[in-house]
Length: 93
Image (tube, rainbow, N blue to C red; front, side):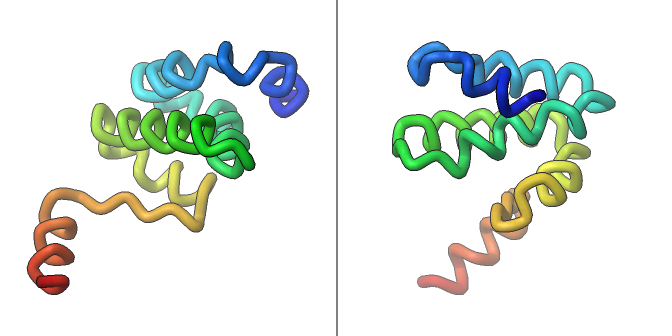
């Protein structure tokens, strides 16, 4: 159902930011909405992937508790918190 709805939008009209805002505002709906963003994240089209990634990160930034739901919905994606990002950048240098 969600995939059909997602594909019904033209690529330029896909409401990724609105989905991310809805997920952040209503974390209880994350399980139903995150699959839409994960489909876009796996798109062959780079602009669609970038927009989906930005939307997911924005949602987790607004509601850090969503990180677990995002990890479950998109297991190949790792979103680091500030402390983990700082450790990673120190280790890379």
